[in-house]
Image (cartoon, rainbow, N blue to C red; front, side, top):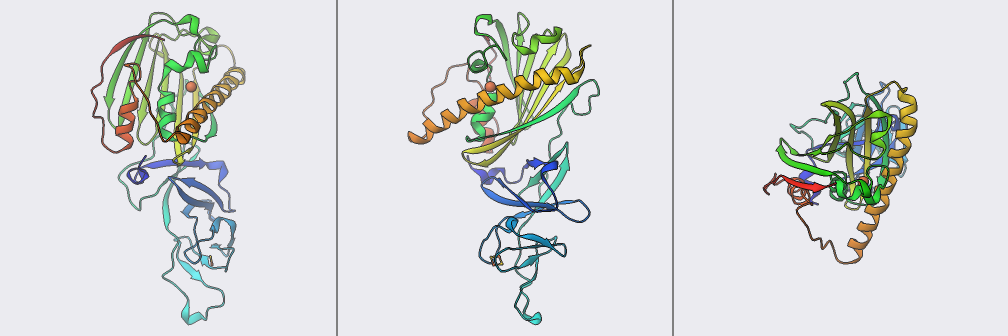
Length: 332
Ligand code: FES
Ligand SMILES: [Fe+2]
């Protein structure tokens, strides 16, 4: 995946609660990023690489409101400008040295950053976050695999009766699905309409899910929505953060329509199922990455069920959707 084409998009770097006044380090698109809060609580992000001898400045400390490198003590202000070089005479201070500063936004409980100095794009808000009829909770996980494989996996229902047997679907309870893929702005959407309600934990608490859809939005946002009789029952929003070509994080929000059962009890059960399912995905995707990296790259074959792979490759490459979508029927 060419990370250059992704640099003007906004990504979730971490959760808001991860960022304190002490500097911490995260990777995004193969770049090290240091992030901390200034005295006003505002999050600031810079390249985590001192311009002097390239030490991670995240291992330094905040001194007089400046970020101090741990090697020779250079200090960088809130704009990333070097304002002090210890030992250098006052009239010779190096004002030109700079830490590259990144744009930061804080919303929906996450720290978002964009690596480009200016971008006309915006961070994506979960579609159902302000829907008071839903109760939302958050999870996160880290995987040793690339973002494209994760995106494909979340939009692929055909692995669920095997990898998530009994949790998301059951092999012995496959039903006919009408599958309709669509192009949408900045991504794609696939709708699944079923003959019978879906099996798995989604059917718990009296829910009858007979339609669901998977949506992908650049630069790696997945929304999975489950409906019964046109009422939304459950939404998963996943933000995929590419750390490197073979490492990613997923920041995950689950929103559920409460029933008579208290949401806290539902999430105690559903949360367990979600964590198990995320672990199952991590295990299978890391196996795939291992085999691909040890065998000279991917050599995939496809059937008409693998509807999104080529489309995702085109979207991530910045080429838009170039392959025609076809509606189809399948047993899921
Ligand atoms: S490497 Fe940072 S001050 Fe020298
Ligand atoms: Fe999965």
